[in-house]
Image (cartoon, rainbow, N blue to C red; front, side, top):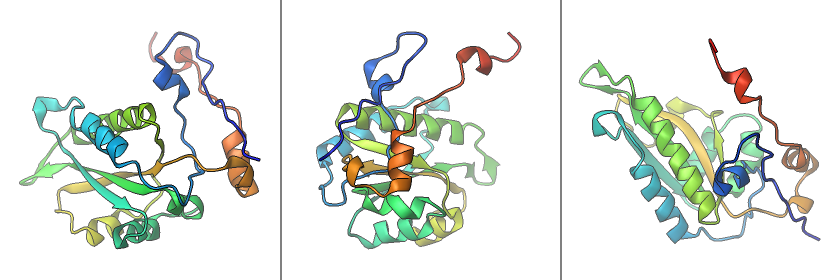
Length: 192
């Protein structure tokens, strides 16, 4: 029997439903096909993220399950990420052009983070689930995909259909069912 999850955040102030309902799952359906239309919408949302001087420093690698690219990204994952992320229908690498002709691009990582955030929100609104990971070998990804020297992989995002939580191994199920928590806005304010 599959569990039905309500992971809606208990917020201190009203926020958009799509934000309150979004969470980072580690349990993906390993057989569900990738919803290509939803992926296209998520990439389009990322494309329209704000960027300093409209530089659009982001680059995306979309590695679909069953491809050599997907296997290469899975191989670059570290630690616990390798235990669950391979089930995702796609692994999307978000990389930033952090240097052009030897000149640092100071806002590139921030802007690429905004693109990833836009992607995540649109993916959720379109019925996909996501989980971002920082635990991966950036040099291996850069080498495998022949990224230019000034392009830095920042995060890998697992994307796909939510899997059956009740059938997941205990460590995954525990993490999935744990209460969602965040520190208060007050505790995040500096100098106030």
